[in-house]
Length: 220
Image (tube, rainbow, N blue to C red; front, side, top):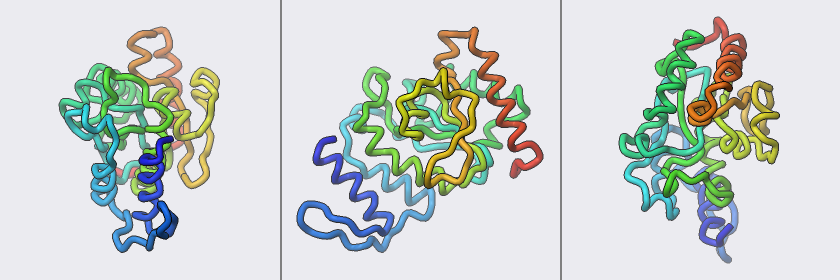
């Protein structure tokens, strides 16, 4: 990770009220802790990172802010970048169908991504970008406080779980991460299913597992 990116990560901890050291001067606890989604969005929008200047819009998150289910994607695509909203392109349409198949819709879930800006050419987020934004993702999850986090695809799964295992081995299995109270389950990214429709059955099955977990507990 570049020195500038390390400084950004340490500054995030300062924003959270944690004293640390940047360069030679100790950071004093910030008076402006991140306690709301608005605080978090502002803090993320101030991060200086190259992909920010290649994107049209910041894509923060959308949905029920008291949802029991949080869906975590990879990064915005072209249509998401244009509208400033997550999963509104073809992948989003497929995701909506998956939710409908188990009696859910966007009013009952919350959706966000590992990265809030579209990487150039829709490339996969690199390790530096993931490392920089992972603390924000964890804070985002804690503010929503869901019962279940569904990682959509290998990138979000590896980023959140900090693992090198592939999505084929991890999907459909409950797991946990230190600092996150919600149960976590990885599944395929909808964009992958557009290329490999034969895997849709497993995708629906994973959402049925999620539905069973939160059945009768959804906060409307």
